[in-house]
Image (cartoon, rainbow, N blue to C red; front, side):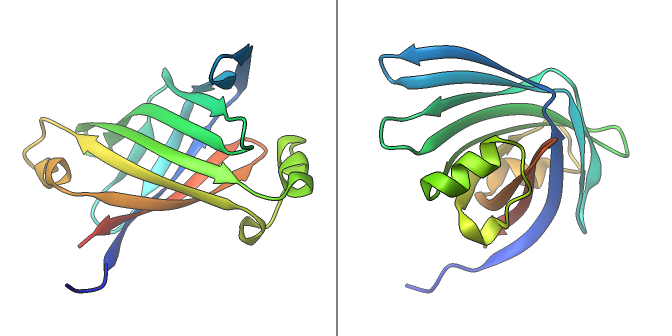
Length: 152
């Protein structure tokens, strides 16, 4: 068995203007983040994120933030791609407090990883339907930024 290798796909930045806090549920503190847009760019595709996506965030009792995101991407040549991912973000309490207060925090101070999957009817980008990908993330005051990699 070989080691895992990856290839850079794109960097994506999402705009998250509003987060609705549903409060404490039986599973943890549930928040819903609205994705109002964004941009992505990489060697094989680039474009924008449509408004209307979202992240169904769960702050678990162990302190980890569990992400459940669904967004629609549109390439610069007009093709639509559905992107969904689950992920985890966690770190020391003081780091997460600074991050949640909207401060810029060095991404090396916390863990932020996701596993994106894609779905499209596009012939040109149909290869996305058949890959596994992973990403590293960091949070800015306006929203998350991810570097997405195809697992080879």
